[in-house]
Image (cartoon, rainbow, N blue to C red; front, side, top):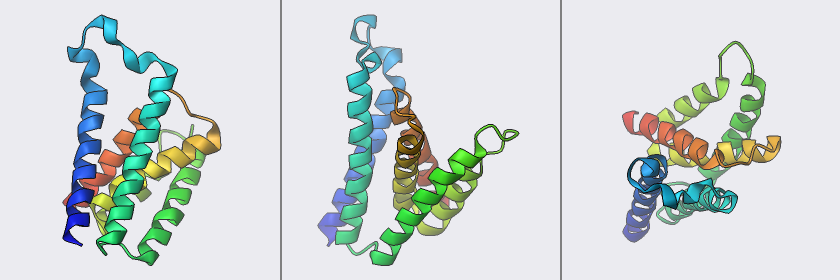
Length: 153
């Protein structure tokens, strides 16, 4: 049980480290290694981030941090945030998805918030066809917002 919680924390740390590297790599790598401009690399990074979020949820279930009701709530909130992202597009600068993500993360914690942010953006991209090289960065940003809001709460 404790091992699963430590593994979950290490997966969360690895995801954050991967995200920091993904955001900052143009600052310290030479021009010849622009590997994230390749379409396959962006898809692989999106898949890796989604798998990290799913692993965090699975390990939290194993450590009995999350129960079946929490997992069901994660699925419902992810679908609701994905739908709210569609509603908020182009509406006078207001994005209702961020309100729900921040409030849910504040209530349920940082790990839940990270997984909620990442999975919500992945589902939203699947709904709208918005899968592109920008998706892993959007997923990481939403995951970090959920993680920070949950840590504050």
